Length: 265
Ligand code: DGL
Image 1 (cartoon, helix red, strand yellow):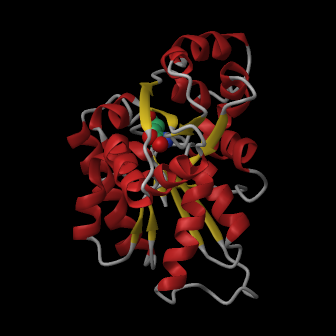
Image 2: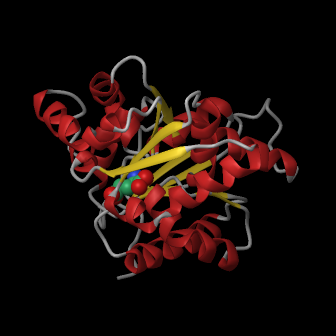
Image 3: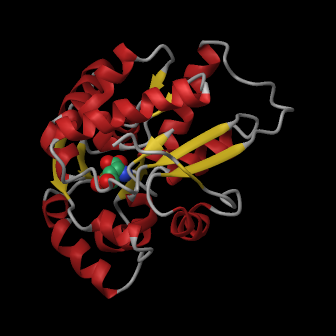
């Protein structure tokens, strides 16, 4: 799996908990983060490089794109270029969002790249039509959230002030369910939940993606015997010591070593 940095660790946490027998290779592209403010063609090229590396250098049997921005930018290219199943975060999140909402008034928040790509309106409309549901989606980009997480600042007044401003459109729309459409955002869930209020259900694409991965691997008969104990490797294209330090705080004790992922450029 890969992400621009630490956000995909929310998906890694869910995958480790749900599928402890599987070996995991995680690449955090911290040397080139953030993805959310970059043009999509640039994110696409990073995502393809990471995907090819996971297959060619690590021999993975499947890839989880643990990043909404990379999914929005590159999912079709990843699926057509790579010879292994590629699981994305957008579709599982959209499906959980529509299923969880009672009123049909739903919201999604994500990076500028993800929100401007239109990936969520398309996915939510497809899910809603397949379930015969009528939903009204409000989207809001949240520039700045990812930067707080990458600095390890997940609560406090500054985060709350920014959240109040950025979440205003989804609050005004009266959503009953809000999808955290960026894998970094579950680290800010307490603040986001506090600002949205207790009646709004928060849906994390991280958990839903882990369920989707289990289903897909099961369908393809690729799940490992659950008596096995998986190994975990964490790599970073940026500073490996700070990746280990903050990563172990965010993910937990499994992240006890980090290697450098070599950049080709
Ligand atoms: N975690 C990534 C996502 O889900 C984006 C982070 C970034 O902007 O680099 O979109």
